[in-house]
Image 1 (cartoon, rainbow, N blue to C red):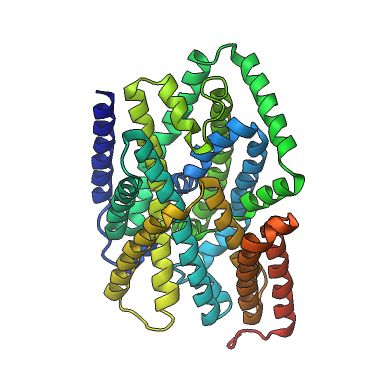
Image 2: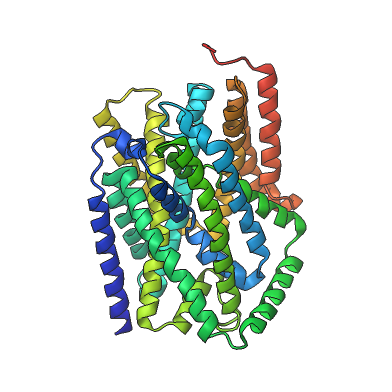
Length: 461
């Protein structure tokens, strides 16, 4: 009976989500598909940003990290909140002020040249596909563990439903469904914390404090300082202006809305991290100590909730995953169309829209196939962060700040940053004991300034 109820609630949610997506209207122009005609109000920018970044990494995995290492990861997570606030103040308004930009690659192309745009587009599509694979793994894991489905069936269901409404509705459907999903998980998971604290934690505040101290002490003792520094840098820089976030900055109605949306999302993330870490700490006194990190939240709710409550949690977790996945699919499709195809062949509006829809489906298929190779949610996210930060951020941020950036600096920074990150991550990082993001960022910055010193300005400047 409990399983039937859970299935019924999940199916009802999917039907309601589909209705919301249909009400968002099918995109008929590429401008609508990519940037929702640059008309997003503050509520949708904030809700969509929050829904996009509070994916399984910042929910399922942060609960698991709270379970294993207490408040250690809260300090690391706060780096992410700081990053969003700084982006809101310093970067997002500059992005929105640029004209005729549909993607991050467009921005880099406008600041450097067409070659830099294509490289940025390739990196952006790869990043979106990689992060989408992490989301697909998480979604498949939730459905598989809940209903005993084969992992491939679960992955196909989550990716298929998300790709369906994203393919036809574009960014507008993505942000409207994100806002709907945000209202669900921003309410229900904090309620889960209150229920667990009030009715299932014996000893109340004292027990919670003891578990927090014990777990945090263990986390600090078992994690080398250089690894903590690597985590902090990854969370500070790894998701900075990834394509879904950049698209929301570009799609906002005004520069003020772009700025305020990121600042509010950063402030919200602080509260969210506290809730997730606290759930993990409470779980230490309720579930088995040898529970796998990615299963802590599911097992906790199984212990404290009736079947109907567990079904509601499934809805929340699915909404968290789909809200991140739809944004990644849309942003990857826009980057592929605008940054990889358009520089070589100018597409008419209808052709660009068709290319974007086809790219959405292709990226969804790649993500579903690659999901099986993702070791864990946190490890998958850290790999993507390690590559993204050195590959894009020096060229993007410096290019937005200085007046005449050199194309040679941009191409060297993106190319060398990507190569060093991959080489260190897969061959040298464990050998020398330094997180790959540190040497990769260092090399990316060095070659950027060398390229700026020896390079020439873009023709026409």
